[in-house]
Image 1 (cartoon, one colour):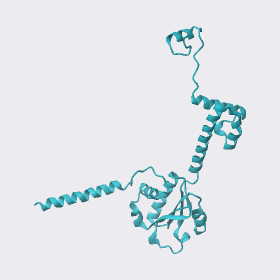
Image 2: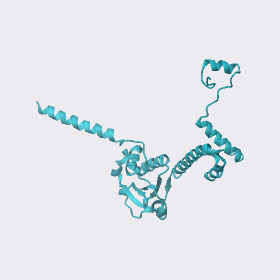
Image 3: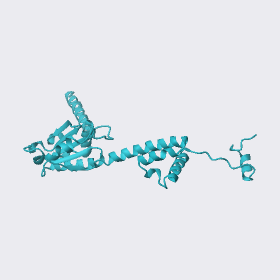
Image 4: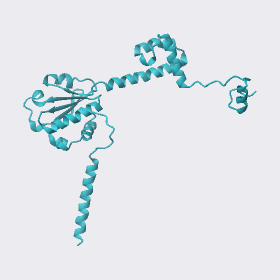
Length: 238
């Protein structure tokens, strides 16, 4: 006997005349997810899965069958990952102004695995102002990293202006790196992506950049040096 669900022209004619029933629709994974969500929504007074917290998801887990439970567990894992990602993204996102009294709490005790970028600055120093602008943008770009700043005379009494700007990088109460003075940053030519790269090399931020933004400049300088050497050799031939 011919399969009534087979895709053939003859079966299409028979279906059109009502001789055989319509072809059964395949149930996709999306259909199963919708079925799970509808089942739970019916039993939870119309509340959708996406609007439930983890406790509410656990409470409704007993109300579904084995196949639905598999889809439910997958959905719950996805929700947990989304919640963790959202929580991490909302941790910081701005540069916090601190004083000496705040240092231990905001820097040394920032939390397990939290990277802290500390900018010690002074008003009236152009490079400090530029640094604050760059760090403010990077704080929004990397909200999982904690960015703080403090006036040198308030945070570290008698700290010399010649050392400004200074950037300390901490993680787990450990000073991982420090950049001290204008030379460490290349002066007023410092670009935001260069600062991002410096922080990424230590691990303070997770950048998408695969190489230093200064590489092109170095390549041009190397080319100039090689060209100069070739010219010198050419001069020696005369």
